[in-house]
Image (cartoon, rainbow, N blue to C red; front, side):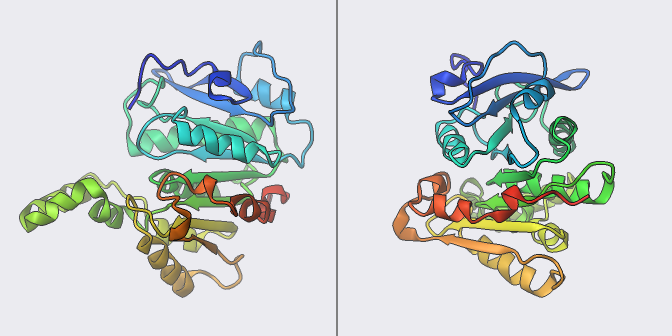
Length: 295
């Protein structure tokens, strides 16, 4: 959902310190981006591109950058996301968050390839401006599929760029099929098995697949998976499925995947894990946020 009366260009109205900027990823696609900075940094708004702002404000190679990929609903300005960015900048992180094509004030029509292409474009901008900084890709909900697929592509194809330091999957799904079957709006199809089978056949036809289970098992880097037990959108059993798959298929020489359970008693659900009292403690333990990226 996008509410045109919400001005996405003014981050201060969301109590955020940062800059709104746009990137042209294709001739007819312009992506809206927020660059959110720690509150202590004074910002100006007179530079033309995201890369220029990063060069201006990322002062040393050890400053961590998080590329945040949101889920399928709302925009980069959705209130709980703004709270999440604010929390993350408390640790000194620089946050880059984009609205995929067709979301918010980004132009174009969304597609699996198009969304991944947009994310790759923005990653290249960040890495070109900050060639040595630790970059973490952080995906939430359906954005975990975009995050893992982007990371997979970078490790398979872009040897000319230093790789990200780590991957965080918050409230992830096991794979697209499991996400579809367990998503609240599709559970109604279970009333009639013929409806469900028709929907599954359509899903296979369009080749819409983000296999988180396979990708995170194949990536030789630090990965953290966080999920709340009371998540009713992507249920907690997705974490358990991922954990079992990774245990069986991940190369033992890779860094271990860390699985973090947010207890039901915390009441965080799908969108508010950042409000968990131990969230700061958990995130501060993500040492890879400040690791030097692999060549």
